[in-house]
Amino acid sequence: MSKLSKIYTSLIIIGAGPAGYTAAIYAARANLKTILITGSEPGGQLLNTNAIENWPGEYHNISGINLMNNMLKHVQKFPIHIINDTIINVNFIKRPFIMYGEKKNYSSDAVIIATGASPRYLNIPSETLYKSRGGISTCAICDGFFYKNKSVAIIGGGNSALEEALFLSNITKTIYIIHRKKKFTADKILISRIMEKVKLKKIILYMSYIVNEILGDHLGVTGIRINSLKNNILLNVFGIFIAIGHIPNSNIFLNQLETKNNFIQINKNNTEHHFQTQTSIPGIFAAGDVTDHIYRQAITASSSGCMAAIDAEKYISSLIR
Ligand code: FAD
Ligand code: NAP
Image (cartoon, rainbow, N blue to C red; front, side, top):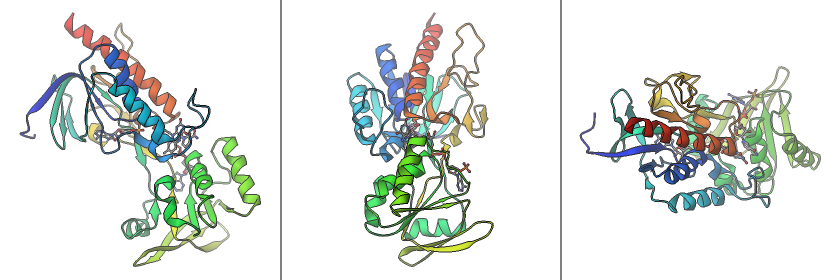
C-alpha cells in the first residue's frame, strides 16, 4: 500500500487508553520489545471526565486527566516506544503483521488492539449542520465553560448523560435532560444526585422524548425541538450535549477480523493456550471497549489489557520455541 519504510518490533499495541497502557506495562515487564501507538486521543475516553469514583484505591476522586497521566508515567518508567500516530489500515493476512499509519508503517509478530470507542451521534441533518457552526458537544468537561449561565440540553439516559448533567449544573443556567425512555439506565447513585437537582429546578427532565430538530442561526444552536407521543416542545438552549453512548473504533479491522455489531470478537482460540483475548487471527489480540458491549469500564478495559499482554507474551514465546 504505502511506500513508507516499516518499523519492525515483537509487539504493537494500538491505543493509549486504560487497555493499551495496562497492556504496555505488562508487556514491558515480560521484556517484550513493544511499540505503543497512541492514535489521536492519548489517554482515551477518560479524559472526558473530571471525577472517577470507581477506580479502586483512588478514594478521593481522581480526574480522568490525572489518572491517565499517571498511567502514561507508569508506562514511561519502562522502555516502551510510544509513537503518536494513527493506524489507518492493516494487513493481518501477512506475517509479520503490517499496520499502515498516517506517519509511518509498522510490522510485528503480535498485535494488541485497544482502540476503544468514540461518541455516537444522533445522525439527524440539523445535528450535522450545527456540529460545524457550534453549539453541539460530546464532552461537558471540554466545552461546558462556553455555556456559563446559559441553558443547555443533554441527550441520553446512561451514566455519561447524568454525569455530564451534574458537571454542567455548576456552570450553566437550566439543564434539560432529554431521554427517549421512561427510566434512566445510569447507576442509582447518579440518579439520586440528579433528582436532588431536579427538586431545586436546576435540572428539568423530559422522559420519553426524542429529538426532532436542532435549531439555530449562523452563530450556532439556539434551540431544540423535541417530541413525545403527546407533546411537541421547543426549548431555547445554546448548547446541546450528546451523551448517547459510544461506537467501537473497529472500522479498519472489519474486513480482517470477526466482529459482532462492530465489536471485535475475542476468545476465539481453541489451542492448549486458551488465549481469552485472541481474535479470529492467532497473534492478534484485542482488549477494552473495542471488544466489550457490556461492561465498558476503565477497570475492565485495564484488566483485559493485562490479559492481552499475558496472552501475547505466551504467543510470541511459542513462535520462538
Ligand atoms: P479508550 O479509552 O477509548 O482509548 C482508546 C485509545 O485508542 C485512544 O488512545 C485512541 O487515541 C486510540 N485509537 C483509536 N483508534 C486508533 C487508531 N486507528 N490508531 C491508533 N490509536 C487509536 N469508566 C469508569 O470505569 N469510570 C468512570 O468514571 C468512567 N467515566 C466515563 C466518563 C465518560 C464521559 C466516558 C465517555 C466514559 C467513562 N468511562 C468510565 C468508561 C471508560 O472511559 C472506558 O470504558 C475506557 O476508557 C475504555 O478504555 P479503552 O482503553 O478500551 O479505550
Ligand atoms: P450507554 O450506557 O450506552 O447509554 C446510552 C444512552 O443513550 C441510553 O440512555 C440510550 O437509551 C441513549 N441512546 C442511545 N442511542 C440513542 C439515540 N440514537 N437517541 C437517543 N438516545 C439514545 O452509554 P454511556 O452513558 O456513554 O456509558 C457508556 C459506558 O461507560 C457504560 O458502560 C457506562 O457504565 C460507562 N460509564 C461509567 C461511568 C461511571 O462509572 N461513573 C460514567 C460514564 C460512563 P436507551 O436506553 O433507550 O438505549
